Image 1 (cartoon, rainbow, N blue to C red):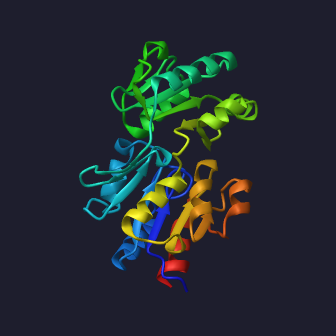
Image 2 (cartoon, rainbow, N blue to C red):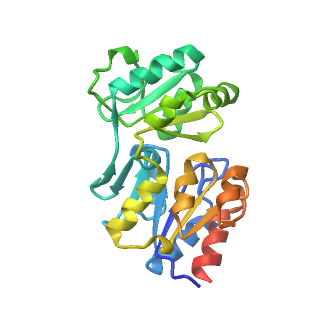
Length: 270
């Protein structure tokens, strides 16, 4: 039995059920693992502000608690937001992506460290992003962004058919210029080329002196692939995409059936 020291958990579709809640069984399993000295970190596409409610619920508020936000573009200590990893691009790239979105007729939004959540069209998927993260959505034509203005990530946010088409027809130049991941059927995300959940967990594990073989990563979607591949034990949820299941070392229960707890009980607490 391996002596796992770090567990990284995706949120939506993994730790959270369909109602966006942490089951009591999941919560108890996480607290039990923490009591054994295992570090548990949330690894989410969400911004830091959109995770605060869960930090409190899971008792992740000490100087020993860390989090991956924005799909690993930012890795922070929770107590004081000390930066472990921070990869951003600029307004120049955001404008390029906005121009491409126009040719596809697809809605988009972006996270700016200065302006928060911004969107030229404020479509329903962008409004959903604002609601689940309890943040304000600001309407802004991306043409107004300065070339050197920092941007954390850009999302094409629309119905699943449009997003699938955008993913399937993405120009090679954009694939090279960005990390491109799909977190849900209606979100296609563009990050700095070095930013992903795998590089985020690797940076955190290195900072904490934990080898990859002692890391468990759990997820359900394309944006979890890098960390599931990196981990000593990569686990896919029962509800995960077929692609993620194929690359995982193990498969646990459904996110609506406390699949995270099932895995922690089996691999850490037993």
